[in-house]
Length: 311
Image (cartoon, rainbow, N blue to C red; front, top):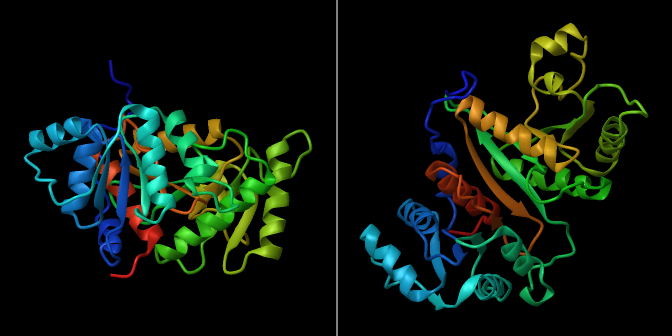
């Protein structure tokens, strides 16, 4: 029996996100172990939308077989024949490190194998910045998106990592056309209470941002209702807060709260979640087997916007 709380809507990739991505040049996307239905379907959709130039990495016979099933002629695209997960991850990451691809995308391989290849010093993707995962979530009825970081990469991000998250989220929102983003630091309360560590962190992060990051409003700690609901903001008399009730992004204290929050948005509203890992030399796409086609093409669009290649 299906829960009444679950949305039955089929997620749709936000057209405005795809249209913005088309303003830029289509990035070359190295797809690690591409020879499986889901990554190949995602690559075809994004290529036909004009927001990706695929660079296939993996078992060549499997890649060609999947392309044939789709009726897709891939003869004009680069294909690097490799064997197994580790070699595919290593080669795809190295292509990005060498400047032969602009985005790194996970195909049919385990996430730990993929990320190990991405963070390896041999890949040449490290920049000295922390890797940060950002979800871009849109409601099926439209309206402005909300971003969440970090819900997939950093398990228990320290203050420095969340400072990087604030900077990366601001940069992405600027690229999305938001000139002065409003970023909320999530906790269970709007007061800094020593017994609630995330609230103390929220206060510290908001203070750090005010002193170190221009062109952004950051507020914390804020409970979820005060991040999302103008009614709750009015009831609790926080109307003077520039972020409360109108946040563009949420910085979470740990992977559990972030992961639960993003899935709640997606499964309860039927919204579309696009995800990208920032902080490396190139954007990284961590696709999941559970991702619908809409999320895959939206993620490709987000990576294209993050690259911002001249057209």
